Image 1: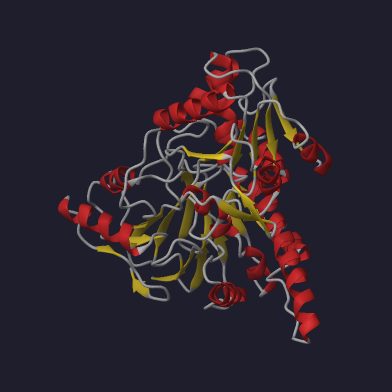
Image 2: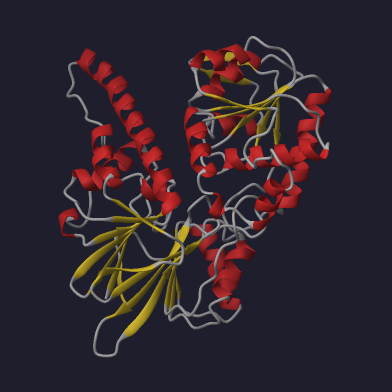
Length: 466
């Protein structure tokens, strides 16, 4: 049995791992790689195996860096099943459609410039038609349901606690001749005690672990500290009569914020002001959340059941914005409010329109609750830049910027350490993926100090015999 590391190896994005066993090929995740433009295009276009020869694809969760290259895989000849947890399949369909629209829009804008220069035009990586073909290949599975993906290979999805429907993938493999082993692929590991979702299931008797190490070099503030930080920032801004603008990712972070604001208003911890979710994708994603209450944790279920009309993701002060006209109307108002909008790193989307209309308001705040990649507008705001560019125009920033940490849906260093310890030292190998070199080295050193041997940080394109 061989394991090939074809994505998210010595980097964070583009999760893709190929397992060869019993004469069959099984792909774990098929995500988009995000990096320098030229490199990203090349990596995402090219598969280092023949898609038509795959027996199955197993998807850990819906985030684009894990699912986003599935339509290209199908376009390149894969016609088999894409196994995913039920809620994850629902989310993936929405996110892939959104990704395809972005691909098509980017290609259209680029081609306008290329046409003027007389240069060859480009094609999108995939289209909405490719997504439509991909979506019918999903096979929806329940948590803890064991099913055969290839002869001698049984798969089980268990709770990962990262986003709705996120899973670790457990593969129980019989190679014949009495050779049996368990491969445990963590996907993205969540954190215990996060609102909404259940805690991650920890490894049980794995022979080999393939696991993420995104935050292997640092801890996270607790969910309680994040809650208190959000409450304090909201109260300060509303006390000045300002607006709270929160850039947030459509999947996971938006729903978590809505749930926390609901709790705060219910408890009287913040003023009852209008709350708007202004992101078409986030609105659609929230509908998927509502359809899968079986994925929620006990705290959330008890919160819902404690009031006759109470919902986790809906309350009387909350409005989900669907139309452009509704979004524009918010910018005509000056009363205190909270607006949650995409994109999460402020590189595109409706959040930029809200920022443009409030950039000179000293009473208001841009509240950063996510990691911001270098060179994004969100990062420049965090770094204190006072002259910022929005839609090509330079503005003198007067709006305040604040940050609340602790909302990460990834396990921090201690959570990753506990994930390994849960296996009771049994794994023959631990392969660290989905992380940069610094976090991987820090976690490797910590695990070595604990007496955990055979921790590897595989290179992209490498393979191992298991």
